[in-house]
Image 1: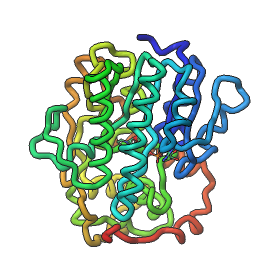
Image 2: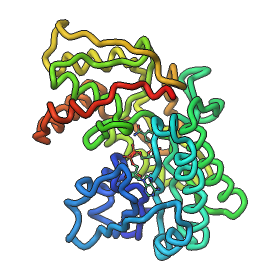
Image 3: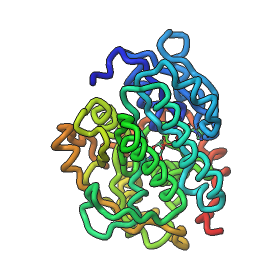
Length: 334
Ligand SMILES: NC(=O)c1ccc[n+]([C@@H]2O[C@H](COP(=O)([O-])OP(=O)(O)OC[C@H]3O[C@@H](n4cnc5c(N)ncnc54)[C@H](O)[C@@H]3O)[C@@H](O)[C@H]2O)c1
């Protein structure tokens, strides 16, 4: 299946990854963005409005009737709307309702509408911490947080709709994604933006735990390319694929890359605090399936990607002090 010319619905299209996906689809597709703006922001897609190909609908994926109406008439669904990991540590029920029940709602709507492809954007958090590395798609699924469990439940619904009803589902598991528009605020704030903001304010990065925990940090342009390639691939119908850089980087290394990129040479050292509950110890993806079936190759290295994020952050003319004052330093332990 070729995506060009298809009518596409993107849930979570006002969010970080979703808005980059919308940017990539806009030149060739009519796209409906569905988002309740709980963490997404209109600025992320505002540059498309008025150009005729992007329509924005503020709606909640927990409303099955509304999802039925909105999905009808579309050929491809990219389902990214979700609530995040840190929220799941103190409000697991809401995260379950959005990530699990919301995904079931989308599956029902997609089946009813007879879509040509349903792409469920899952997460490496569905694996939990690595038992063996690199982690292939057949690695055990043992999430360590309610968020990971809810993403896995979403996968199970999507897969069951393929097995029971033949819904053409593709499940993509991105690993930790970073880049422009990534959240830095409150409960949604991610590690790279938080470190960058603190160092731009001449403050040390705050690391939860010993910082030796690792992630397979992947730049958002690589993630979006992987999601698009997966959606077009017939071999992946009913299948799951990892999209990642295929390289393990510790939180301490990330802190050091950011400090160096912002011109600090040893005078500022990370502060360590209590580990976060359920923090995955090790993530390192095996991307040989993506290489084989999609010809996917990550293109952005961590140092280059972090520099790209810093350049973007500098262009935003943020009020750095005001943003920094909003930081709440908690490790989300209930
Ligand atoms: N960022 C990462 O590192 C990462 C890694 C792996 C997988 N993912 C997955 O990718 C997807 C996008 O993640 P992101 O980082 O862009 O997050 P994000 O928070 O920026 O985007 C999620 C979007 O969903 C919207 N949303 C939340 N609840 C909703 C609801 N009930 N109804 C409608 N819209 C709702 C939010 O407003 C937001 O715009 C998620 O499914 C996430 O699980 C993210």
